[in-house]
Image (tube, one colour):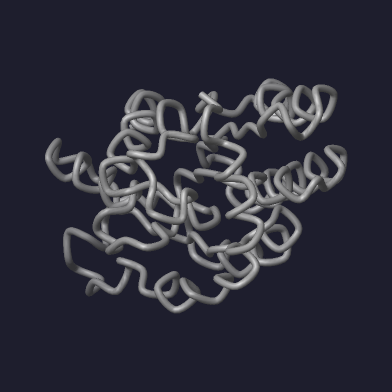
Length: 224
């Protein structure tokens, strides 16, 4: 799983700082502008809240895994619309600051994909967990009936055995404590695989996003 991960890590640290604004405008281009009497308006909303992995960095927005999930939903004629609220470079701290604005619009399913940038920067695990818990708490307080899905992330062994294990444990512990749905590892079969990532060695290719969508759908389909 981690045969190319060290290169992936070093590159992400260099690039994630500079691309934080790249997807903020696309984040605002939600699919919620339908007239009040249209079928789309009556759909329930799934918000994918995350970093460049969710934003689909380096790809067309239609190639990112949230759009692929929307395509599956449409093929099954399910009454849901997807909002891609991914921002490149996002940490759990910045996500915790941004979530209040996202929650201004009603949502029914909340998909939380954050923490990877924290781990790559060696941010204390307790801080990452605290921020993720705060985001979950805010979603529950605003929309208590919403279903929340947490995307698990991992860091490679070269971050240190103790840190690596503690970081990986954040996600199942949060999911268990808060009764969340869990995708054990968002980048399963993609992370560290050069053929499934862009030339930067960081972000999944279109093919990589199709595998990520499979990982997400394996959990999400049971909710929808």
